[in-house]
Image (cartoon, rainbow, N blue to C red):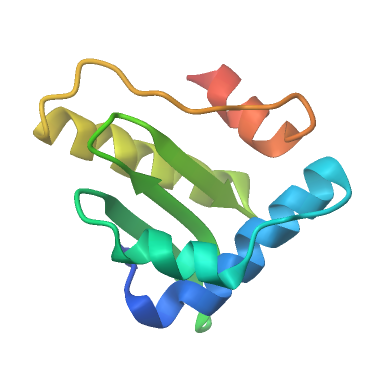
Length: 116
């Protein structure tokens, strides 16, 4: 069973692997770099979470102060749990709306977004 926790700098490598794999699955390639992910983790004003299973990151999400969020999950149930965490935190921060960019090629995120 996956456990959701706050993401830390120690998660950068596995988060990069997850996000790059999602982009390759959706687009056939990924131009994302490890440095971009590491830099993003140093940005203030964002909440970040990972889901781990047996020590491996299986899902990631972050919510910025501009109401935008990023989401990637291997398992749809874990993905939904992360979306619940995003919704809960957005409510705590007083956000009235959220924004995510979903492309047709990212079937997994598109399916989760359509359920909401």
